[in-house]
Each structure stands twice: as structure tokens, then as C-alpha cells.
Amino acid sequence: MQGVVYPERMDDRVINPDKLKMFSFVLYSQLAGAVTSGMVHLGDKLGLYRILAAAPGSMDAENLATACGLQERWVREWASNQVAARLIDADHADPHRPRFVLSAEARAVLADDTHPAFGMGMFHRLPATMERLSVLPTCFATGRGFDYDAHGHDGAVGIERSFEPWSNANLVPVVLPAVEGVVDALRRGIEVADIGCGAGSAVCTMAEAYPESRFTGYDISRHALAIAREKAGSRGLTNVRFVDAREESVAEDGRFGFVTTFDCIHDMTRPREMVSIIRRSLAKDGVWLLVDIKALETLEQNVAKNPMAALMYGISVMSCMASALSEEGGEGLGTLGFPASTAEAFAREAGFTSFRQLDIEHSVNAFYEIRP
Image 1 (cartoon, rainbow, N blue to C red):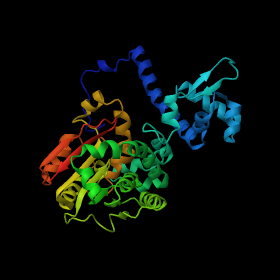
Image 2: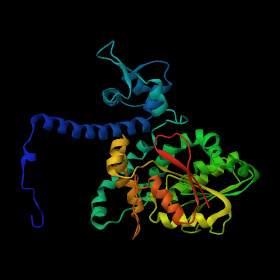
Image 3: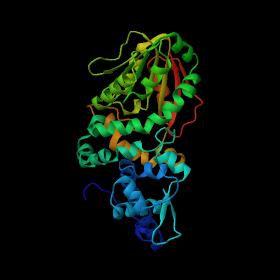
Image 4: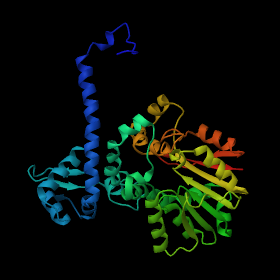
């Protein structure tokens, strides 16, 4: 091919049979994970995990199918996949009629949406995410991505299910007290903005805990905003409102005593501009709580230190980076494109003078307290 330079030495093209087998194993392991992810989605959607979690003991495929109103043969094959994938346990005392059960840990992750470790959110939105494969070749050719509403209603629900359990359990008792002075300010009553509020879980949680403060959630996802408004209404919250940032931009008059951004700056087309807006929106004694994905400086570091790096880079193509490139001139940070050094550089460029990482344990996110 014209323009392609091939190496003079071709020794690396001699195939080692053992390495070939191992490479094939690695490849098909990825496919096995993808297929099993589809089975996890079905287990959640069809209520199979919830029935297993609620059962007083193990269940065979017939009992499980009957409890879910499904056909036994389909349930048996699904459960076989789950046992092979080591997600559910099986009692093989009768080898022709195994019985299935969830461990305590599996119940927490697969079936208990109140547990901080609940993990079904990304699997909820799996079909919507994988549908993006049909348009991604065009994205690669043109450079333009798509925003979060391209994933539809289930995309918004899935993100909320991903982050809400941990947030509900930790935001008020753990995270906010770690931000110096903010709890006292919230109790007294201040203006608060949650930018990139999604389906409103964090806003509603804070609004319930601090009724003297007033909260505004900003987002550009109509699907997420509709869920957020319904959530606030169902809880009877009168100190919170949700607005489309394209219709009402973030106020830049220093009115907010507290601004939060949860897992969204790396998704934005113009993150530097947003950081500058946040700086102008904050009162002189205000504080910005930045929560974003833990990331390191280089591909080599991320691969070496983050066991979920492959997942995160892939999700970036299908979701995060795609969103960050959804407008002409988008910066395209992507899922692992916003390490602490970049966050601090953006903050200081915008005029912030104080940048501190908080000592909060989280498997995915880092937490920063940033002040004017």
C-alpha cells in the first residue's frame, strides 16, 4: 500500500503456536464477556436475580421459571451461562437437575438496588450502548460523536441506576462532610448548582437533607431531566428545580455558595469553558466539588494501574468521548482523559486558587475540593 513503511525484519511474523493459542483465548474471552453481559442484562430485566435473591434457598430452573412467569428451557440455559461465568452458584447434587443460588455478595451487586455496590446500571443501558455500534463507523470517519440522549430513555435510567446507590449511601454522610464548611453553609441556606445533574439523584438527596438551601440542577439530556423532575415531584421537594442548560444557562453572577459536578466534566464538549463558568458562578467564599473518573497521565499508566482500563476506553468510544465530540470543536477528553493534573490545570487557568483532593474511597471516582 502506498505510503506504508514495512519493517525490514519480519521475524516477529513467525507464529509461535503456544502464543497463538493464548492470543485466541484472550480474544474469545472478550467475546465471552460481551455475551455474558447480555445475559446479565436479561437477568436484571426479567427479574431472575431478584427472584433468586428473595428465595429462602436454592431453586432449580423449573421453579425459577415458574416464579418469573417464563419458560423453563430458556431459564435453564441462561442459568447455565451464569454458573459458567461464576456469577451464580449451583448445587449439582442431582447432576441432571442443578439448583441455583446467589451468594450474599451476588445479591448485593445483582439484586439489591439499595446497596452501594449494586451494579446493574450499565447493564440496564447495554442494548442502547451497543446500538451505537451502527453509527460509530461514521463517527470515526467524520470525527463527530453524539450526545447522551442518543442512548434514549434507557440510557438515562441506566446511568442513574449506576450512580444512585452509592450516592444515596455516601453523599450526605461521607462526601459533603469532607468538604470544609459546606455542611454548615447548607444548613444555614445557600444557593447550590449541580451541573450535569443527570436524572437528579444527587440534587434530590441534598435537597431532602438541607431544606433551607435552594438547588438547581442543570443538564442537556431531556430524558434525564424528565426523570429528575418526576423524582423531585414524587418526593414533594419544593427547594429544587431542574433546567435545560441550553434554555437557561448557568448563572455567572456569583450567586452559588456550592457547585457540584458528578462524573460529567470529561463528557463535555467544552470542559475548559465550563470550568470558567463555574468560577464565575461561585460566590467569593463558595466551593466547587468536582467528582470525576480516576485517571492517570498515560495509556501505559492506566493499563498498568487500572484493571478496568479496557472497559473504560471502550465505554469512552461508545459514550463519554462520543459525547465530548458531539459538537464541532469538542475537546474530546473521554473517560480517562481528565486526570488530577488536567483538572487542576483547568481550574487554575479559570482563576481558582485552591485545589485539594479529598480522602474519599471510591473504586472509580476521585473527589476534589476547589475554591476561588
